[in-house]
Length: 268
Image (tube, rainbow, N blue to C red; front, side):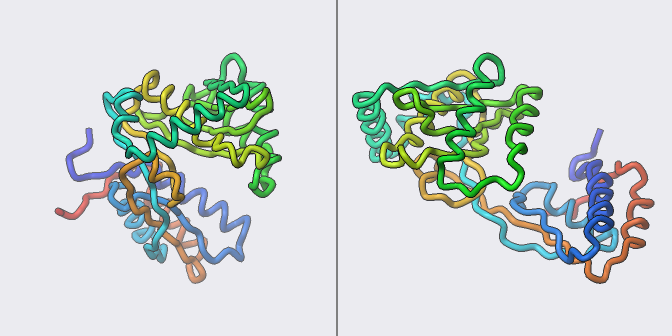
């Protein structure tokens, strides 16, 4: 059992091994970054201290903004009531207009029935979206399959007249519902399909999964302020190893042993 004020760094040995592998494979790489880490969590100073104590030069820098909403014990109806009147009216008006003018259907799969169809629809939507082609096209399929295996996936697809219009990938882990990725077909851009799907997934998540937090992920996109009320500034740790040799890293690994040790934090 860990004492209060200490942080378990069992993961650090594995990370340093990965760094060693990266240096071996890409010897000309000068900077490695650990972006979008919450500086208020114990992991941020722990990782920085672990790297520094093993011969790494580190520097903190701004990472991104993360928007989220605490929602423990809150139903979807209560959540909607807490939104601004402007946002509530927009959600209602856009949903009614879309459902009045088109045949609208929403599916949310956790990897069981309908997963293959949802994955195919996601690919179609992505191919017709504003997003640049993925560098590793099979990554998403592998990620979704891993989420299915871990029982964390919520993949939402909104169909308009039976055409896949917009998709959102959510995960549910440790009581947190996280919006991981979204896309919409440019053809449906002016129909606010993204807002309609967000409302439907939020209803599903809050009333069925019942998380304590809804996390809209990294990035200060304007739409996130409509759905969430809190933000945290996330930092990054850059590790510049132009003058750090593999020998230094190997010495660090030998000190870590199996990668299990604790770091005493300074009194706050």
